[in-house]
Length: 386
Image 1 (cartoon, helix red, strand yellow):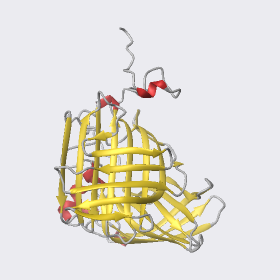
Image 2 (cartoon, helix red, strand yellow):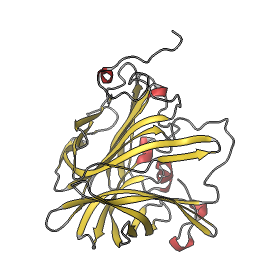
Image 3 (cartoon, helix red, strand yellow):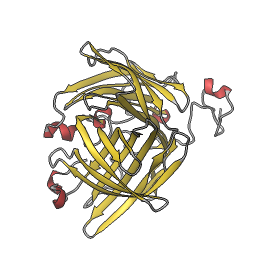
Protein backbone atom coordinates (compact mmCIF):
# COMPACT_ATOMS: atom_id res chain seq x y z
CA UNK A 1 0.00 0.00 0.00
CA UNK A 2 1.64 3.23 -1.14
CA UNK A 3 -0.53 5.58 0.91
CA UNK A 4 -1.64 3.72 4.04
CA UNK A 5 -4.53 4.82 6.25
CA UNK A 6 -4.43 4.80 10.04
CA UNK A 7 -6.21 2.04 11.98
CA UNK A 8 -9.95 2.33 12.60
CA UNK A 9 -11.34 3.21 16.02
CA UNK A 10 -14.71 3.90 17.63
CA UNK A 11 -14.46 7.60 16.76
CA UNK A 12 -14.52 6.77 13.07
CA UNK A 13 -18.20 5.76 13.32
CA UNK A 14 -19.13 9.42 13.86
CA UNK A 15 -19.34 12.36 11.46
CA UNK A 16 -16.56 14.50 12.93
CA UNK A 17 -13.57 13.78 10.66
CA UNK A 18 -11.41 16.81 9.88
CA UNK A 19 -8.66 15.26 7.72
CA UNK A 20 -8.54 12.47 5.12
CA UNK A 21 -7.51 9.83 7.63
CA UNK A 22 -8.84 7.97 10.66
CA UNK A 23 -9.07 9.36 14.19
CA UNK A 24 -5.97 7.39 15.19
CA UNK A 25 -3.73 9.90 13.41
CA UNK A 26 -3.36 13.69 13.32
CA UNK A 27 -2.76 16.12 10.47
CA UNK A 28 0.99 16.55 11.00
CA UNK A 29 3.97 14.28 11.59
CA UNK A 30 5.52 16.69 14.12
CA UNK A 31 6.55 14.62 17.20
CA UNK A 32 5.53 17.57 19.42
CA UNK A 33 1.83 17.18 18.56
CA UNK A 34 0.01 16.79 21.86
CA UNK A 35 -3.53 16.62 23.20
CA UNK A 36 -3.51 17.45 26.88
CA UNK A 37 -5.75 18.02 29.89
CA UNK A 38 -4.60 19.66 33.12
CA UNK A 39 -6.68 20.23 36.25
CA UNK A 40 -6.55 21.08 39.92
CA UNK A 41 -8.91 20.98 42.89
CA UNK A 42 -8.19 22.90 46.09
CA UNK A 43 -9.66 23.44 49.52
CA UNK A 44 -10.46 27.13 50.00
CA UNK A 45 -8.56 27.17 53.30
CA UNK A 46 -5.39 26.08 51.51
CA UNK A 47 -5.03 22.88 53.53
CA UNK A 48 -4.91 20.54 50.54
CA UNK A 49 -4.76 20.56 46.74
CA UNK A 50 -4.97 17.89 44.04
CA UNK A 51 -3.19 18.02 40.68
CA UNK A 52 -3.90 16.04 37.51
CA UNK A 53 -2.61 15.98 33.94
CA UNK A 54 -2.84 13.62 30.98
CA UNK A 55 -1.20 13.91 27.56
CA UNK A 56 -1.59 11.99 24.30
CA UNK A 57 1.25 12.02 21.74
CA UNK A 58 0.10 10.13 18.62
CA UNK A 59 3.35 10.64 16.70
CA UNK A 60 5.32 9.21 19.65
CA UNK A 61 2.94 6.31 20.41
CA UNK A 62 2.83 7.51 24.03
CA UNK A 63 0.21 8.53 26.59
CA UNK A 64 1.46 9.86 29.92
CA UNK A 65 0.10 11.64 32.96
CA UNK A 66 0.49 12.66 36.57
CA UNK A 67 -1.69 12.82 39.66
CA UNK A 68 -0.73 14.08 43.08
CA UNK A 69 -1.39 16.17 46.14
CA UNK A 70 0.12 19.26 47.73
CA UNK A 71 -0.28 19.72 51.48
CA UNK A 72 1.54 22.80 52.70
CA UNK A 73 5.17 22.48 51.63
CA UNK A 74 4.80 18.72 51.06
CA UNK A 75 4.04 17.15 47.68
CA UNK A 76 3.36 13.57 46.62
CA UNK A 77 3.23 12.75 42.92
CA UNK A 78 2.42 9.67 40.86
CA UNK A 79 3.44 9.60 37.19
CA UNK A 80 2.52 7.00 34.59
CA UNK A 81 3.36 6.40 30.95
CA UNK A 82 2.19 3.72 28.51
CA UNK A 83 2.33 2.64 24.89
CA UNK A 84 -0.55 4.42 23.13
CA UNK A 85 -1.40 1.51 20.78
CA UNK A 86 -3.60 -0.44 20.61
CA UNK A 87 -5.96 1.73 22.74
CA UNK A 88 -5.42 5.32 21.58
CA UNK A 89 -8.86 6.48 22.78
CA UNK A 90 -8.68 4.99 26.29
CA UNK A 91 -7.71 7.75 28.73
CA UNK A 92 -6.32 5.40 31.36
CA UNK A 93 -2.63 5.00 32.28
CA UNK A 94 -2.21 2.45 35.05
CA UNK A 95 -3.82 4.03 38.15
CA UNK A 96 -4.53 7.40 36.43
CA UNK A 97 -7.97 7.81 34.84
CA UNK A 98 -9.71 10.66 33.00
CA UNK A 99 -13.40 10.45 32.16
CA UNK A 100 -15.83 12.98 30.65
CA UNK A 101 -19.13 12.79 32.54
CA UNK A 102 -21.17 15.46 30.73
CA UNK A 103 -19.47 17.14 27.78
CA UNK A 104 -18.26 20.67 28.56
CA UNK A 105 -19.83 20.48 32.01
CA UNK A 106 -18.46 17.76 34.32
CA UNK A 107 -15.35 15.56 34.34
CA UNK A 108 -14.02 12.83 36.64
CA UNK A 109 -10.34 12.74 37.65
CA UNK A 110 -9.18 9.56 39.37
CA UNK A 111 -6.01 8.23 40.95
CA UNK A 112 -6.49 4.64 42.05
CA UNK A 113 -4.49 3.09 44.92
CA UNK A 114 -1.03 2.40 43.57
CA UNK A 115 2.42 1.15 44.62
CA UNK A 116 4.21 4.43 43.85
CA UNK A 117 2.73 6.63 46.61
CA UNK A 118 0.19 6.15 49.45
CA UNK A 119 -2.38 8.47 47.86
CA UNK A 120 -5.62 8.01 45.92
CA UNK A 121 -8.50 10.26 44.94
CA UNK A 122 -11.59 10.70 42.85
CA UNK A 123 -12.87 14.17 42.23
CA UNK A 124 -15.66 15.40 40.04
CA UNK A 125 -15.28 18.77 38.38
CA UNK A 126 -18.58 20.59 37.85
CA UNK A 127 -18.58 23.87 35.93
CA UNK A 128 -20.03 27.14 37.20
CA UNK A 129 -19.47 28.86 33.84
CA UNK A 130 -19.17 27.56 30.25
CA UNK A 131 -15.70 26.79 28.86
CA UNK A 132 -13.84 29.64 27.14
CA UNK A 133 -11.49 29.21 24.18
CA UNK A 134 -8.29 31.18 24.73
CA UNK A 135 -6.31 32.99 22.04
CA UNK A 136 -4.36 30.58 19.86
CA UNK A 137 -0.77 30.02 21.02
CA UNK A 138 1.49 30.48 18.01
CA UNK A 139 5.23 31.06 18.00
CA UNK A 140 8.22 30.63 15.71
CA UNK A 141 11.92 30.21 16.18
CA UNK A 142 13.61 31.18 12.97
CA UNK A 143 11.63 29.58 10.15
CA UNK A 144 10.05 26.81 12.20
CA UNK A 145 6.69 26.99 13.94
CA UNK A 146 7.47 25.80 17.47
CA UNK A 147 3.97 26.25 18.92
CA UNK A 148 0.55 26.09 17.30
CA UNK A 149 -1.88 25.32 20.07
CA UNK A 150 -5.59 25.69 20.83
CA UNK A 151 -6.75 25.69 24.45
CA UNK A 152 -9.92 26.18 26.43
CA UNK A 153 -10.26 26.54 30.18
CA UNK A 154 -13.17 26.12 32.55
CA UNK A 155 -13.86 27.15 36.13
CA UNK A 156 -15.90 25.12 38.59
CA UNK A 157 -16.30 23.35 41.92
CA UNK A 158 -15.17 19.93 43.16
CA UNK A 159 -16.70 17.00 44.99
CA UNK A 160 -15.38 13.54 45.90
CA UNK A 161 -12.67 12.23 48.22
CA UNK A 162 -8.91 11.96 48.68
CA UNK A 163 -6.89 9.47 50.75
CA UNK A 164 -3.39 10.14 52.07
CA UNK A 165 -1.62 7.45 54.12
CA UNK A 166 -4.98 5.73 54.56
CA UNK A 167 -6.80 8.79 55.94
CA UNK A 168 -9.76 9.96 53.87
CA UNK A 169 -10.86 13.57 53.39
CA UNK A 170 -14.19 14.40 51.78
CA UNK A 171 -14.24 16.97 48.98
CA UNK A 172 -17.37 19.13 49.04
CA UNK A 173 -18.37 21.89 46.60
CA UNK A 174 -19.01 24.41 49.38
CA UNK A 175 -15.37 24.16 50.51
CA UNK A 176 -13.47 23.25 47.31
CA UNK A 177 -12.92 24.85 43.90
CA UNK A 178 -11.61 23.28 40.70
CA UNK A 179 -10.19 24.47 37.38
CA UNK A 180 -9.30 22.62 34.20
CA UNK A 181 -7.98 23.17 30.70
CA UNK A 182 -7.82 21.13 27.51
CA UNK A 183 -5.39 21.83 24.65
CA UNK A 184 -4.23 20.29 21.39
CA UNK A 185 -1.69 21.05 18.67
CA UNK A 186 2.06 21.40 18.23
CA UNK A 187 3.28 21.97 21.77
CA UNK A 188 6.44 23.34 23.35
CA UNK A 189 8.58 21.30 25.79
CA UNK A 190 7.79 17.84 24.43
CA UNK A 191 10.50 15.17 24.46
CA UNK A 192 14.20 15.62 25.02
CA UNK A 193 15.60 18.99 23.92
CA UNK A 194 17.01 18.60 20.36
CA UNK A 195 20.79 18.48 20.32
CA UNK A 196 21.43 19.37 16.67
CA UNK A 197 19.66 22.75 16.36
CA UNK A 198 21.27 26.16 16.16
CA UNK A 199 22.22 27.14 19.73
CA UNK A 200 20.68 30.14 21.40
CA UNK A 201 18.37 31.06 24.26
CA UNK A 202 15.46 33.32 23.22
CA UNK A 203 15.15 34.52 26.84
CA UNK A 204 18.83 35.42 27.24
CA UNK A 205 19.16 38.83 28.88
CA UNK A 206 15.41 39.14 29.41
CA UNK A 207 13.04 38.73 32.32
CA UNK A 208 9.96 36.63 31.60
CA UNK A 209 6.84 37.20 33.71
CA UNK A 210 3.70 35.13 33.44
CA UNK A 211 0.53 34.16 35.22
CA UNK A 212 -2.30 31.90 34.11
CA UNK A 213 -5.16 32.23 36.57
CA UNK A 214 -8.79 31.00 36.54
CA UNK A 215 -10.79 31.81 39.70
CA UNK A 216 -14.29 30.82 40.88
CA UNK A 217 -16.09 33.90 42.21
CA UNK A 218 -19.20 34.34 44.35
CA UNK A 219 -21.20 37.39 45.48
CA UNK A 220 -22.87 37.73 48.90
CA UNK A 221 -26.24 36.86 47.31
CA UNK A 222 -24.85 33.52 46.16
CA UNK A 223 -24.57 34.29 42.44
CA UNK A 224 -21.42 33.02 40.77
CA UNK A 225 -19.07 34.13 38.01
CA UNK A 226 -15.51 33.47 36.94
CA UNK A 227 -12.41 35.59 36.42
CA UNK A 228 -9.60 34.52 34.11
CA UNK A 229 -6.27 36.33 33.65
CA UNK A 230 -3.22 35.46 31.59
CA UNK A 231 -0.22 37.56 30.70
CA UNK A 232 3.26 37.00 29.29
CA UNK A 233 5.53 39.99 29.74
CA UNK A 234 9.12 40.28 28.51
CA UNK A 235 11.23 42.89 30.25
CA UNK A 236 14.78 44.03 29.55
CA UNK A 237 16.96 47.12 29.87
CA UNK A 238 14.82 50.06 28.78
CA UNK A 239 11.78 48.17 27.49
CA UNK A 240 8.72 46.17 28.49
CA UNK A 241 6.85 44.05 25.93
CA UNK A 242 3.45 42.55 26.74
CA UNK A 243 3.54 39.57 24.44
CA UNK A 244 0.22 38.08 25.60
CA UNK A 245 -2.65 39.69 27.46
CA UNK A 246 -5.94 37.85 27.72
CA UNK A 247 -8.72 37.27 30.18
CA UNK A 248 -12.25 38.19 31.05
CA UNK A 249 -15.18 38.20 33.44
CA UNK A 250 -17.08 34.99 32.69
CA UNK A 251 -20.80 34.61 33.46
CA UNK A 252 -22.95 31.47 33.82
CA UNK A 253 -25.14 32.44 30.85
CA UNK A 254 -22.12 32.54 28.54
CA UNK A 255 -21.61 36.30 28.49
CA UNK A 256 -17.98 37.38 28.74
CA UNK A 257 -16.47 40.81 29.34
CA UNK A 258 -13.01 40.77 27.79
CA UNK A 259 -9.92 42.03 29.60
CA UNK A 260 -7.65 43.98 27.21
CA UNK A 261 -4.84 44.99 29.58
CA UNK A 262 -3.33 43.77 32.85
CA UNK A 263 -0.94 45.69 35.10
CA UNK A 264 0.52 43.41 37.80
CA UNK A 265 1.76 44.64 41.15
CA UNK A 266 2.86 41.36 42.69
CA UNK A 267 5.65 40.26 45.02
CA UNK A 268 7.67 37.06 45.09
CA UNK A 269 9.88 35.16 47.51
CA UNK A 270 13.48 36.01 46.51
CA UNK A 271 14.75 32.44 47.07
CA UNK A 272 11.97 30.16 45.79
CA UNK A 273 10.30 32.80 43.55
CA UNK A 274 6.94 31.70 44.93
CA UNK A 275 4.14 34.23 44.52
CA UNK A 276 3.46 36.14 47.75
CA UNK A 277 0.45 38.17 46.59
CA UNK A 278 -0.44 41.72 45.64
CA UNK A 279 -2.89 43.14 43.16
CA UNK A 280 -3.58 43.31 39.44
CA UNK A 281 -5.25 46.18 37.63
CA UNK A 282 -7.42 45.00 34.76
CA UNK A 283 -8.76 47.17 31.93
CA UNK A 284 -11.90 45.81 30.28
CA UNK A 285 -12.93 46.25 26.66
CA UNK A 286 -15.43 48.98 27.61
CA UNK A 287 -12.63 51.08 29.12
CA UNK A 288 -13.56 50.40 32.74
CA UNK A 289 -10.86 49.46 35.23
CA UNK A 290 -11.07 46.89 38.02
CA UNK A 291 -8.43 46.15 40.63
CA UNK A 292 -8.21 42.60 41.92
CA UNK A 293 -6.57 41.82 45.25
CA UNK A 294 -4.61 38.54 45.32
CA UNK A 295 -3.79 36.69 48.53
CA UNK A 296 -1.81 33.45 48.54
CA UNK A 297 -3.83 31.31 50.93
CA UNK A 298 -1.04 29.03 52.21
CA UNK A 299 2.14 27.20 51.19
CA UNK A 300 -0.03 24.63 49.39
CA UNK A 301 0.41 24.57 45.63
CA UNK A 302 1.13 21.64 43.31
CA UNK A 303 4.43 21.99 41.43
CA UNK A 304 3.83 21.07 37.79
CA UNK A 305 7.52 20.26 37.36
CA UNK A 306 6.79 16.91 39.00
CA UNK A 307 4.29 16.43 36.18
CA UNK A 308 7.21 16.88 33.72
CA UNK A 309 6.64 20.56 32.88
CA UNK A 310 10.12 21.85 31.90
CA UNK A 311 11.39 18.33 32.63
CA UNK A 312 11.97 16.46 35.89
CA UNK A 313 15.01 14.36 36.81
CA UNK A 314 15.93 13.92 33.14
CA UNK A 315 12.45 12.97 31.91
CA UNK A 316 10.12 14.99 29.68
CA UNK A 317 6.57 15.04 28.32
CA UNK A 318 5.92 12.37 25.71
CA UNK A 319 9.17 10.52 26.32
CA UNK A 320 9.05 6.80 25.53
CA UNK A 321 9.06 4.82 28.79
CA UNK A 322 7.90 1.40 27.56
CA UNK A 323 4.61 -0.50 27.63
CA UNK A 324 3.74 0.80 31.13
CA UNK A 325 5.79 2.70 33.70
CA UNK A 326 4.45 3.94 37.06
CA UNK A 327 6.64 5.93 39.43
CA UNK A 328 6.51 8.75 41.95
CA UNK A 329 8.09 10.49 44.90
CA UNK A 330 7.28 12.25 48.15
CA UNK A 331 9.01 15.58 48.72
CA UNK A 332 8.81 16.77 52.32
CA UNK A 333 9.65 20.44 51.71
CA UNK A 334 9.24 21.95 48.27
CA UNK A 335 10.48 25.32 49.57
CA UNK A 336 13.98 23.91 50.07
CA UNK A 337 16.08 25.84 47.50
CA UNK A 338 17.44 22.64 45.93
CA UNK A 339 13.98 21.09 45.62
CA UNK A 340 12.49 24.37 44.36
CA UNK A 341 14.87 24.36 41.40
CA UNK A 342 14.35 20.66 40.77
CA UNK A 343 10.58 21.27 40.60
CA UNK A 344 10.74 24.58 38.69
CA UNK A 345 8.61 27.62 39.47
CA UNK A 346 5.28 26.90 37.82
CA UNK A 347 2.76 25.60 40.34
CA UNK A 348 -0.97 25.59 40.92
CA UNK A 349 -0.89 28.25 43.64
CA UNK A 350 -4.10 28.45 45.70
CA UNK A 351 -5.22 32.09 45.77
CA UNK A 352 -8.02 34.17 47.27
CA UNK A 353 -9.13 36.95 44.94
CA UNK A 354 -11.21 40.01 45.81
CA UNK A 355 -13.16 42.00 43.21
CA UNK A 356 -14.65 45.10 44.89
CA UNK A 357 -16.15 46.43 41.65
CA UNK A 358 -17.84 43.16 40.74
CA UNK A 359 -18.92 42.60 44.34
CA UNK A 360 -17.45 39.13 44.69
CA UNK A 361 -14.64 37.15 46.21
CA UNK A 362 -13.28 33.85 45.10
CA UNK A 363 -10.70 31.11 45.23
CA UNK A 364 -8.82 29.54 42.40
CA UNK A 365 -5.57 28.76 40.68
CA UNK A 366 -2.63 31.01 39.77
CA UNK A 367 0.35 29.62 37.85
CA UNK A 368 3.20 32.18 38.07
CA UNK A 369 6.70 32.43 36.60
CA UNK A 370 9.18 35.30 36.97
CA UNK A 371 12.75 35.05 35.68
CA UNK A 372 15.68 37.43 35.62
CA UNK A 373 16.52 40.12 38.15
CA UNK A 374 14.41 42.93 39.58
CA UNK A 375 15.90 45.20 42.23
CA UNK A 376 12.49 46.61 43.19
CA UNK A 377 11.22 43.10 43.95
CA UNK A 378 14.45 41.95 45.59
CA UNK A 379 15.13 39.39 42.86
CA UNK A 380 18.69 38.74 41.73
CA UNK A 381 19.49 37.67 38.17
CA UNK A 382 22.11 35.34 39.65
CA UNK A 383 19.37 33.41 41.46
CA UNK A 384 17.03 33.17 38.45
CA UNK A 385 15.57 29.85 37.35
CA UNK A 386 12.59 28.74 35.30
